[in-house]
Image 1 (cartoon, each protein chain N blue to C red):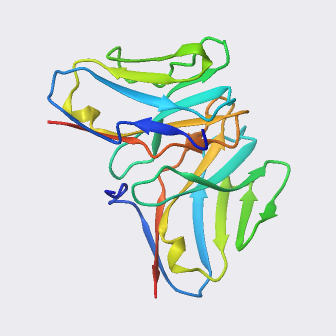
Image 2: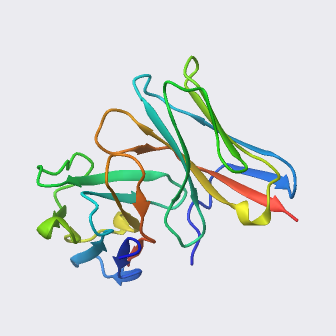
Length: 111
Length: 112
């Protein structure tokens, strides 16, 4: 399918390296955050989430860090693989009934 | 079904025509969301349905946009008198609660 987000910020990493994707959020009242992965021609796919009473949460090869002081969220991917190449979005629950999404970062993994 | 199904996957329409986009959510999911994704942009919230509550239409960009959800299941997003700026990927998601969305693959709308 056709790609979305052709003009997004891009992070290029070598296969096997660790990746860090950053996201700044705007609403200090947000209490829930999610990272999504979107491959070309597909809808976003849930990766990992974190609530505001935590500052770190780990999944399989992924870690999300939350710094509420500076309203910053990051996604760390260990041992990045070619299959990790995609656009990554952070999303926050601002108190509205639907999530608010960031603008996304494209991750390119070089073999 | 096993996932969120959207149809059509691609739609090309002439400026000024009306279009209908369909979303079939995961069975049993009470919440349904429509988002729009323009090239190089993030996801823009359009509308949210939760059970029998009045929908949150606060994201609809103009009165040319409307959506309904029949029987708490299938939803249709209608765009009247389409304009070129309506060209985008329209994504539908469903969930049991406000978290844990499952997205469909989207409908790519091109207005020529």
